[in-house]
Image (cartoon, rainbow, N blue to C red; front, side, top):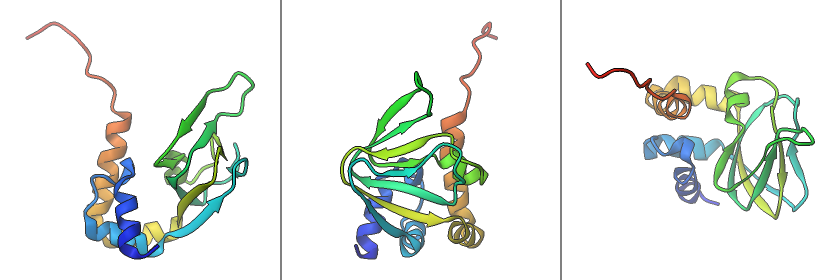
Length: 142
């Protein structure tokens, strides 16, 4: 894929929707492309998270590992971004349900770009904050 195609694919991912196109160009330049066959595991619970994995084609199952555990099928998504940004271990297992194409960005590459582009950093923070914002408590009207 060329850089323009990568930028367009990144823009489809919710994590990057608030990012400017020129910032996505910088990310696109450092993305590695990866293809998984159906059944292949991208990462497992408790593995260190060293890359931001971005699913751009196909379907993957995310599971928390327990027998009665939570399972979710995802398309066009960043996979376990919290573990990546926290530089911790994965809390999920990601397995391809069909052939999948992904972009991968190393922690070092992303840190370099975020250091140089604070507006991109703010866009990612805005997105992540919206995902974790608690609802406003309902109380008496004032």
